Structures are given as C-alpha cells and as structure tokens.
Amino acid sequence: MPGPLDDDPNPWLHLPKTAPYVLPENLAALRRSSPRALANLVFAASPGPFIGNSLTAQVILLSLNPGWDESDLEAASNEAIQIPWLKPLRLRDDAVFHPIDPDLIRAGGSPYWSRKLRALIEAVGAGAVMAGVACVEWFPSQSRKFVPVNEPLPS
Image (tube, rainbow, N blue to C red; front, side, top):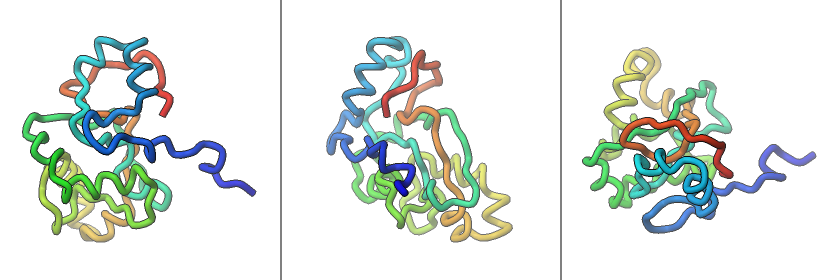
C-alpha cells in the first residue's frame, strides 16, 4: 500500500540552493494572487514549513508562518544554521526541533521557541522536546509582518 507521500512528491526537494529560497510555482502563485503579501515576504533564508520531525513527533504545533527580523540575515548565510532547517524540509529521519538545541548557534526562531516551550523543556528536558515536538507552518516563508495570502500555494 502506498504511503501518504508516494503520490505527492516533496516539492521542497527542489528548493533553490541559493537565495532567493522560493519555489518557482509558489512565487508565480503569489505574484498572481497576493502582491501585497509578496512585498512583506523574505526569501533570503530557507523557508520553514516544518520544524522538527513532523512524521514522528508526538506533539504537532500549528503556526501561521515564521517571522523575520533583519538580524536573521546573518543566520541565513551561515551553513551551520541552515543545515538543521533543511532536514525537516527534506523529511529526514534525523530532523529534530532544532531551535531549542543547546548545541546549535542561537539564531532565527531560537529565542521565540525557547521562550514558548520553556515549561515543557523544564518538565521533560530539551532532548525529549527536540525529539517529540514538531511545528507545521500554514505558510512556509518568513515575513516582516503577517499578511493573508489569497490562495493556497502549490507546495
């Protein structure tokens, strides 16, 4: 019996290797339906439709979209920071909820997620949270502020 991903290949495997990090079909849909939203989106860093292992997590958090701060630009060009972001995109088994990993450079969503998950981390430990929690974003690209997108993206 085919699995849930067999009929729908993972579009994130085709993400450009350099900025702008946006799938061509997503960009076309945004230009067509949401030019106002497009002006607030940032494609300087890898998109974040998934954080952690969304296939094995015991807890799935739902979020609108990742935010963007100009200080994130340095992190976007740091390979050591980008590799953990790419693992969930590729649905890799070794993907973890990396923003709270104490061994990684603190950047991007790290302060946000450390603050939001502090009580859970204190209760069960960072390792258990990294392995058991994932986040699925409604919209994958970072934005300076949230602006609704008028149609679902192809990805």
